Length: 222
Image (cartoon, rainbow, N blue to C red; front, side):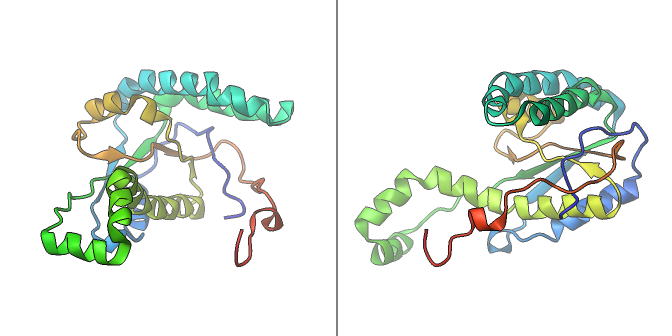
């Protein structure tokens, strides 16, 4: 965990199907809400499919650099920002040569609450709580899906590091999620949560640069 930075500069050398399936197996070992296991993983290795996705990736990356990237530039020292930007642009320019992509997906089945269920919610939360639940139900559903995907995704990233593979978790594709799903045949009702490029790294693994625990830890209350 301490030597697992985002690895964006990847070799064109293929990654075996056996190793990629081991990564997805690691993801499947992750927990999901109610153990529903309603996740799916799209694995892309076909060169033509990758080439077709490259223009979408470029548009998303350039939009990121023009928006969030500009904000980051004001919060980072120039050297760190330029290094990060150079790695992102390298990945953009060589995306079609990426050995593999994994796209984690999830679709939470719709829950139809019956009258007894609603009464139980009101008993525990009150009518005001029921109203808040109704108002924020979409966010809760999305977080329920995300919390059933990202633990497995972290498993995948750790497994990749253990095998010596480089990977990076990205969500830039969400800027054009409809186009990505159309290109990959993902049903419209299924949510995608990341695009993870995977391959043999061109750079050595090194220590991650993270904030000290003392700066982020709150004991007993904020």
